[in-house]
Image (cartoon, rainbow, N blue to C red):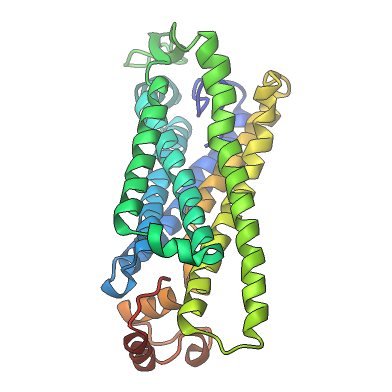
Length: 360
């Protein structure tokens, strides 16, 4: 999620009704629709990727990516949707001064941790695809299940530890309620002594956040995928004059799927990166209402990004599509099934003949 200088979701805002209406339309209406679609798509993707015929070392990264997508849409929707619905439709004090303050630390930490996991899983799967496509001989020696699992565990541990300062950066303080007759005590989120330090406010929450969440992933993904696309172009040009190898073609299909997933992610992340300039320049107070609306839209793009990978898998991933059709007994497939999905029996014979397990 796109963050402010001190916290990832500016939950203490109490400015005009117009701002809340804008947030309610996106966070309270649009986000639940996207999250519902994302849950269905990610659950279906998980079921297909965990099928025996989809087992492969590369798919370990894709399985981890699906889990991180589901975690991100879960925690982010709790952070964005629940407070807005309660505030708008139930009680303003209950949403702003009870639910938000008491849920902020936990949801903020889990949201930012799952986002960091999601980003660096994409970086590592791009590294794996780069080595597989551009340096296939080295890939044979360094590509193993143990190393992939170690990479995933390392990403999780890094994400968990990196975001620990967020837990101690805020504290809850009593404050007057909007409604004097409200039956509960009202609270607000304040920066703690640690959260007000220069190290946290300027170094950790702005510069380190920009580098770790935007700079490193974007540069790595752009560099790696440009090299991958160049190599794929050369391989396809060569295949026009030489007989294609089936296993090589399937490896390329897997890579194209991952490149498309990375491309969608990069577009959304680039918008967030440009939005972060306001904090780098220390002028976030200028045009606060407009800037908040931009942040709301960017956060919505992040939700879309974590919800639509299923579409890429089903439209581009040949093996994923075949497995999906057989798993869910789809009798009619609206993409000329004979050409798009092929004959399952012939496909199985091909796999046995090649004695290989491809991915996606």
